[in-house]
Image (cartoon, rainbow, N blue to C red; front, top):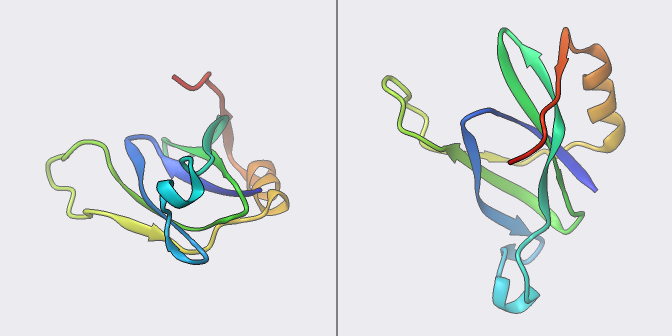
Length: 102
């Protein structure tokens, strides 16, 4: 499994695997992406930990709402992290939050 942190108010868009964009017809399913019920808090912002399957290479993320003054339309996360790196970031965080996913 691979992991990434994503700010509250952002969602997953397109997903890439080794052959290109994830094709639900070829794979016969959606990619396995799950928000876990733990987050780190940095500067008052919750960054939720997500888990993705190993076949996922990159993930596009984008804001769920168009906030005033937000100029970022989308971001592609190219470096997903290992479980060890996720645990390290959790252990070094100033604060931890948890909430059951909705």
